[in-house]
Length: 74
Image 1: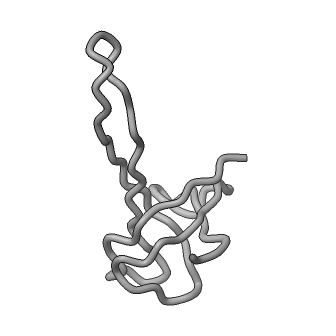
Image 2 (image 1 turned 120 degrees about the horizontal axis):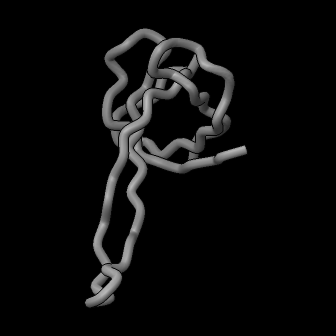
Image 3 (image 1 turned 90 degrees about the vertical axis):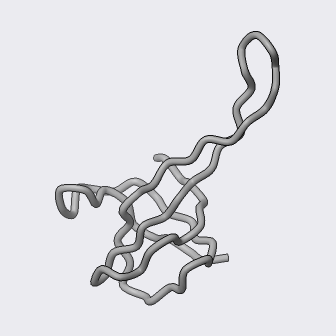
């Protein structure tokens, strides 16, 4: 079961949040560290504000893009 933690970037859709997860990677040759981000469409019954940090988990497909649901907020 995959669990991610990310920041809410959009809450305009009904029961759907857009959450961005940032990862820190290292360049294979130069070893410099840099950030990469990915956005996920997450199902949520509760209302969250933009900028809040939430934890979400993989679940059954709810719609075409939503395959995640919020488990807790920080």
